[in-house]
Image (cartoon, rainbow, N blue to C red; front, side, top):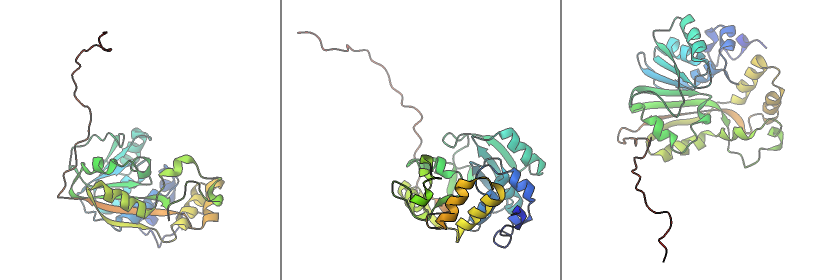
Length: 270
């Protein structure tokens, strides 16, 4: 199956891009442009906004965000080469509007309130499940700024063990996959976000399966798992929230100042 033939009606913006360029920019098991387009449908992205593309991989989604929505993007990732990402950005002709930033999602090098929006495409589960992370990340959004995520997830939460038809493919690290309702509760508990959207892509498992067959036809374990599951548990999930304007996120604890005072280790005898 050719990449160019996949769901042009569902993702009309993505369908304009060279399939070879899209494939070369893949850094995971999903078509990042499909997911970015789907997420942007429920976000308010306007030209000139400052956007953090968090966990952007090789940067295809960052290029797409600028070309399609006119936003300025900080393409930030820890695992993939910032140099290779910059070459892709430069060759796409968007170097004045998209920056390649090597950074850990838990140690972001940006000023407080700098971004109008933070997006994370098929990456947020690797760091965002931490109970304290939403409060940390919200500090980088202006009051009212948007946080949006989209990626592989669950239609409904699993028990401790996955169902039989998923066990050959499932690994312990996949515990980071969650449902839209899970993300809604998780973010609501943070106290700093107002949730606008939390849902799943209709027949998202089919898009996931189509992409795997086109881009990774030898990935038989994942293809077989999706084919057997047929959307019972697996699909694409998105969620969008806004930083509450009436709440100031707490400063993260970087270090605790202490002064050592020498004292005997043991009680005095007698």
